[in-house]
Length: 328
Length: 266
Ligand code: HEM
Image 1 (cartoon, chains in turn green, blue):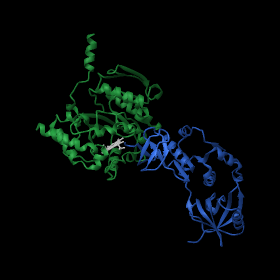
Image 2 (cartoon, each protein chain N blue to C red):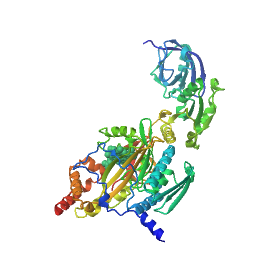
Image 3 (tube, protein in one colour):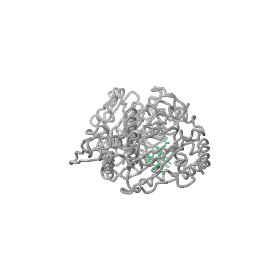
Image 4 (cartoon, protein in one colour):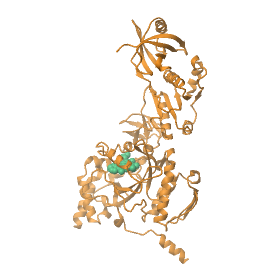
């Protein structure tokens, strides 16, 4: 009994307050699209937060209810998928041995998720021994959305992806397409040819030298899945934002994006971990509140329009300016 | 530049409208070994009709020309044949063949629809002369027409045509060996469909060549049900499958051959 309790406490995910771990994306008072990736330190993909249990449950429900909107793969992505599974399991058991466990006997693997109390035996490399495709399987144990990009013909193709918490884009439309094609809608980023430079940078990425970048927008209500596929369900909510309720209704949404070269397939593993914080909670950090206020004031309309907050931008600005005044 | 003058040696009617002409050059040589032309020009008269040619022995100035007389009246057809038998002639409006043979092609899967018959016969002739393995995949309709094609040069070397309708093309493509190329000649919807499958299976642009005929109908991808509906960019259409009203963007996926149709904002 004692032992078990000890294990339970060891396994409990530390309840660090959101403000102490939120990946605030801004360096200064202005934000423009740029080639803003920087070296990832420490070189890990997983960020296990107190929301682990609820987010995994949400992910799995989404995958059950609308699988094709949340998971897509090209037939030739299988090798890359296995490499990702191996990469993540390796990180799980070396970085988080209290949460995950692996027993290997040749190609026979027994993977155990101690947080969820689940075990899965399978033969590495034989997809018929797993209940889902390898990427779809391992993605159900992590909070991150995961993508495999295949590198060939001087291009990177979105060959497989598990996307449960999209920020208004469709994996079904974009699966199998090249980097420049799926970045075409991003204003300025595509037309200024920055996307081409970023592509060149990604294709030169080396194994063992991962990168990281934050991407941000805002979301009305605490909603991780923002599917383009159900635009009609969430977009009318933008109308409800007022200066008075913006603090509770609007969330700053940050995607912590990480990029890893996969040496076996020579592809890229792209992960994104989405974090949400209400404007009200954000204002508890006055420095952040001021920075975000200035970023919004300074943001060009093409960017606000693309990111989708233009209809309630003034409300956010009014709310933040009040909060900054009332505290300082 | 000196005009390339050609003289008929032998002719053969191989279907209701298609003729194969065995010709030699009197002066000059054509710019391409394998190509297309739009006009037969005699000294006093010219005729516009679909023409393809290929040079079976390349260096010796011999060509095989395929002409399709479908669009000519009976009178014009007789006239063309008479002229060919008695006069030398030139080919006008030349362009290279849509299909280019890449080095180290070992085998070609040739998908054909009837609309592309002339082009396909020329490609088949080219491949046969170069001793490249080919598999002919045709529509049911063309399989019937094909049986009526009577071309004695091919009696031994021609493979039989298999129908690809109701076949698992995805599966067929996925077990092809390295060195296999795909040629698709037909109406756009068929070409688009094959293109999509070929890309899914991992054939690069180089390995998949095509010639599309007719109107290129743009499609819209419904972001809700993931099915395609006919429609163009920057318009509004209703999805034929789930009835969602779509605001069609200008974002185009080559893989899907379709524009992204977003759910209309209310
Ligand atoms: C390699 C993996 C990557 C994938 C799979 C990916 C995918 C995407 C997708 C699907 C979108 C949304 C496009 C739409 O509206 O339909 C997007 C947006 C964007 N991407 Fe990427 N991207 C990747 C890497 C990068 C990198 C390295 C950069 C570096 C600058 C970048 C910059 C951007 C920007 C600026 C946006 C607009 C985001 C916003 O304003 O909200 N992406 N990306």
